[in-house]
Image 1 (cartoon, one colour):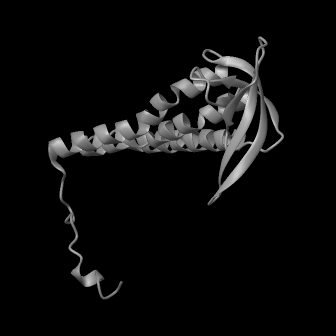
Image 2 (image 1 turned 90 degrees about the vertical axis):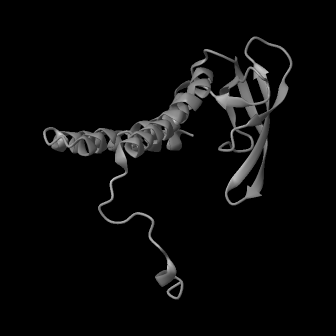
Length: 175
C-alpha cells in the first residue's frame, strides 16, 4: 500500500468549490438518498398497520442458515377469517417454531409481523433516512454564505440525526 500511495492523484484539490450546479446536484442526491428509504417503507408500514394484506397467524416452520448471518425462513400462514393455510416466506429474523400475528402480502408470498413490533420494524429505514437529513440545512446555509442561524442548524442537525439513529435502533431491535 505504501508503495502505491505516492502514485495516487487526489481528485479534489483543497479549497475547490463544486460550483452552483455541483451544489444543486449534491443537495438533490443527498435528498434522494434520505427520502428513498421513506418511499420504499410505505408498503411495509401499510402491511404492519393492517391497511393492506390479510390478517392472520404465522407459524414459522423452518429457518435455513445461508451463511454470513443470513437466514431463509419458511412458515405457514392461517388467515383470521378462516380458510386454508398457505406456505409463505417468513421474516429472516424469525425462529423456527415461533407463532405470531402477521399480515399476508397482497401477492400472498410472504407474511410480515403485525402490530407494534411490525410497525417499529417497518420504521427502521425511514428513521435512518430522517436522520440523514439532519445536517442538510447546515450545508445549504454554509454554501449560501449565511452566517446567522448556522449554530442553530448544527444543534438541530445533531438532534435530528440522533433521533433518526435512535428510531433506527428501536426498529432494528423490534425486528
